[in-house]
Length: 200
Ligand SMILES: [Zn+2]
Image (cartoon, rainbow, N blue to C red; front, side, top):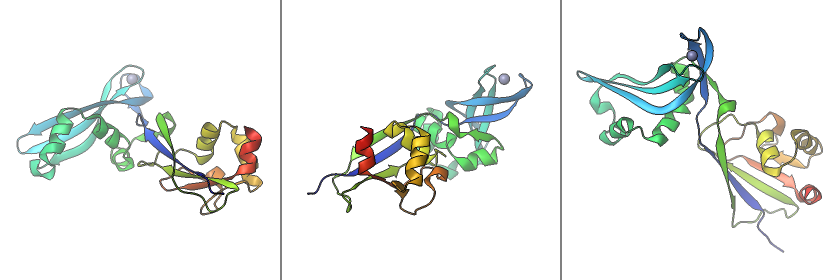
């Protein structure tokens, strides 16, 4: 008997990480939230582009540098217009960019990211019929713990995920400790069916 036992989970971020930095008005380190708005400044023949963040407490703004003193031909006209019209996908894209965080010397709070997960049944079969295979799709490295993801999607506790891993009922394609892994694009997780039945 063959049946569909491969499921794809696509993790789609709905927000970007808040960033931690000193707020001059609050006089303390605060979390700043992505406003999803850009500031574009064309100064003579050079362009600056920032993504505007706001302090969660006092709403003071801080500009995160995206491009600094670049020539107009360094970015396409389409891209430039997207910055000017506060394109949401672009604001999410840069807000999720680890290199941009580094360049701006801010600490990203990845736990603050909200995301949706789209579940798709794949029209393929896993070779082994006694187990369920899950494939993770995520365009951005969201630093989401694999055991947290499993606990949410399977609606079981993290300690139960730990027990399953320790009993060999759950494993990944590279056989690393799933309790220490972050979900990544292309990750494959296998769970023994006997377990799934027991928990329904
Ligand atoms: Zn503040």
